[in-house]
Image 1 (cartoon, rainbow, N blue to C red):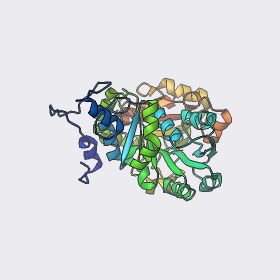
Image 2 (cartoon, rainbow, N blue to C red; image 1 turned 135 degrees about the vertical axis):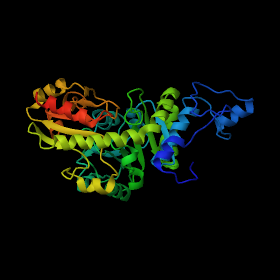
Image 3 (cartoon, one colour; image 1 turned 120 degrees about the vertical axis):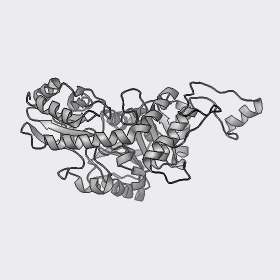
Amino acid sequence: MSQRNYRPETRLVQSSILRSQFGETSEALFLTQGYVYENSAQAEARFKGESPGFQYSRFANPTVRMFEQRMADFEGAEDARSTATGMAAVTLALMGQVKAGDHIVSSRALFGSCLYVVEDLLPRFGVTSTLVDGTDLNQWKNAVRPNTKTFFMETPSNPTLEVIDIAAVAKIAHEAGATVTVDNVFSTPLWQSPLALGADCVVYSTTKHIDGQGRCLGGVVLGSKKFIDDNIHNLHRQTGPSMSPFNAWVMLKGLETLAIRVRRQTDSAAAVAVALHNHPKISRLIYPGRPDHPQAEIIQRQMKGGSTLVAFEVKGGKDAAFRVQDALQLVRISNNLGDAKSLITHPATTTHQRITPQARADLGISDGFLRLSVGLEHPDDIVEDLLAALDKA
């Protein structure tokens, strides 16, 4: 597959298939912990890295490797390592690049658990950080220190859908001798290609759009072969945040339909944004792709599509937002996203409840703010459900 310039939809179905001697059509599920060797010399050679093959499924597994290679092919990366969860991927990507005494610059608009890793976990190991407004290039530039090792960002961000100019930030980072790590979950590889824009590392929670049907947890870290070998491979091998073979098989099946699902969800999300725009009970609506998005110009040149997510602020604060959520009949309350089912969450009391009210206010997460993940239902049904619920606000 790598010898042909196939389009993304083809690569999602056909790339990196490793067939057994039985010649199965579907990817094989190798539920095994370990592997046997023909003789002692072969076992020795495998552990020395002198002979190809598998040793132990904490290190690598045929089904897991198929998923990693297909993700790398889709992303335009040279290599990848998968993990048990999306947060394991974020933690692996960041910890693999730093040591005590190093410094990270991060956008402040992050998922709550990502903020925990940057602000609470890494400092325990002597790694400091500076949080910046990701849309302000001068803040990135001014935050650089001699010991800065990587820039980290979500774009679009969770939950306010803030979009950062990846190419411009990458230029600043590389001039300072730092790398760029991008969480690309909200756009998916279909709509945004951070590596092509200058990023050195891309991470995903595969729990979201890649599975896309609410089944399994997972994550993946992607980059050049040198980046993975130098920063990720050994930490992944020795500490064991491994994806299970079963989950990898589910992710492979999810990839086959990702392009179809994400396109439909993006179209429906755009329709929802149109329907809710200027609604009398909504004070603010954010959707990447709309001309009134604060970073519309960056989105136009950086992304190939909008998003499957819409964010909006209900007038009346928490009580009104809760009334809207509780009145929904089709859209379900859940903190997950990228699912075939439409889901809504109140970030101030769920995904971002651990940060201070002032920090939430600085991020634009008010008490009336809601994040909607648009699913595969008919868009008119989603819109009708939302409009009926807004009547209760």
